[in-house]
Length: 298
Picture 1 (tube, helix red, strand yellow):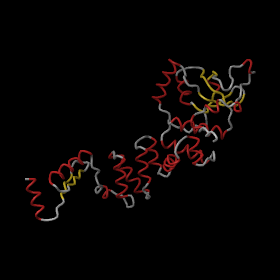
Picture 2 (cartoon, rainbow, N blue to C red):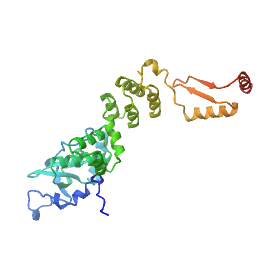
Picture 3 (cartoon, helix red, strand yellow):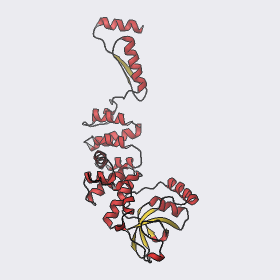
Picture 4 (spheres, one colour):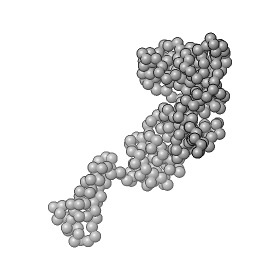
């Protein structure tokens, strides 16, 4: 049986070991330390950022922390670059390390030097970032979409490249159907991917946004949003309908309901609203059963 092809998503190690992708600097190999496949040291001024970088937001506090670490310990993992021309290079992966090194005030950084055309570079950058799981869900979704649109990868091929299940890729791509306001909140982590996935199932955009805004202001859980979508997803979810939203029982409330049901011998439902108000429902089938319940409560 043929050996299964390793996913590019496992890292760039396969490319780094491939002699067909090697390229050296303008200097002769005998006099140069910039030999592809080994770690070289490049001046920061010779490196430009990757225009294909799928990541758009960098946490400044995290960069500062990384810069302090780099200042004390150096760059542990080299960045990966491609050669553009005479002593000019472009980032393929490692922009956080590159930026932090600049902040740390260093003049050079360890690198792997590769060769790649624009499409290969785009694919490498996208896959590398997705595999590192440093992107927010929206950036991951956009990266998958770019792999489809610009690198002409099918979801099946993409699954092989990034080492993710096809269903996972599909779930990310579905996020892009959400309105910009919801995507912005997801990007800023005002809501989680679980919240967003629940909202995808609402067909009406106005209803979708109303549920979303309520979820943010009331800090609804994913389960609460799923229940609201189930109850009102196909209707016009307005302020009036919000007041009729079914509350989701907590474990404590469920235990109280179960204890009361056991004590009274009848099904008891406890409904508690976020305000703390609520009601207790006890089912009975006859006047005699009601008398029995009253006696037990008394």
